[in-house]
Length: 108
Image 1 (cartoon, rainbow, N blue to C red):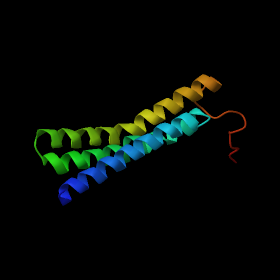
Image 2 (cartoon, helix red, strand yellow):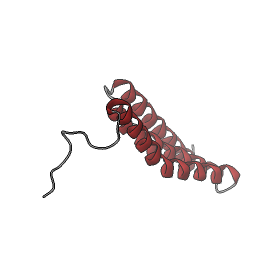
Image 3 (cartoon, one colour):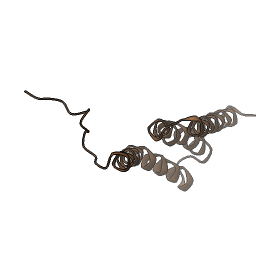
C-alpha cells in the first residue's frame, strides 16, 4: 500500500468516525438545542475529511472540484440552517422570537 492509499484510508476513516459520533450524539442529546451542536462537526469536519480523501485520490478533476464545492456549501449554510431551526423551535415553544419576561434586561 502506498502512502497515498494510507492517507486516503486515514481521511475516510476519520470522516466516518466523526459522522458516526455525531449520529450517536444526536440520538443521545435530550433537547433540540443540544442536538443542534452535533450538526456542526457533521457538516464541517466530517465532509472536509471525506472531501480531502476524494481530492487526494482524484486530484482536481471534476469529482475533486465537486467535493470542494459541496464542502464549501455545507460550511457556508450550516450556520444559517442551525439558526433558522433554533429560531423556529423558540417561536413554537414561546410564541415569539423576542426575549421573554425573564430574559428582558432593564436599561437605565
